[in-house]
Image: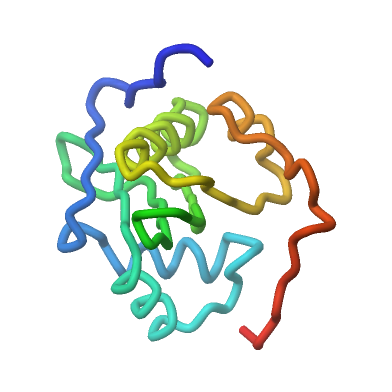
Length: 146
């Protein structure tokens, strides 16, 4: 693994939950993210309130351009989810830099593992050290609805 990718010039990252543009994040996820299509705003807001949130912002306008959320106990486990980059700024390396920043933010917690699920972005995550599960047959899931 090489040095962590940095955000391109003109963008900034924040974990301040008050900076999250909740309406924008909900719109992105509920209308354009295959894993969250149709997610109700109330459910999205509860998820944000109970998670560690990362936003990427345009430095000039302050407009949010990317988002990631982490569910974690900050001791043993984390789940990286809801990673999204606005289509207008894709291709600039924002997603890779965002996930690298999440990884570095979590590193001091000494977590045993950080999990994520992706249908189509394996290459992005592999560049940052994520690998397929060694023993996927040991993992199970309990679906309780949307």
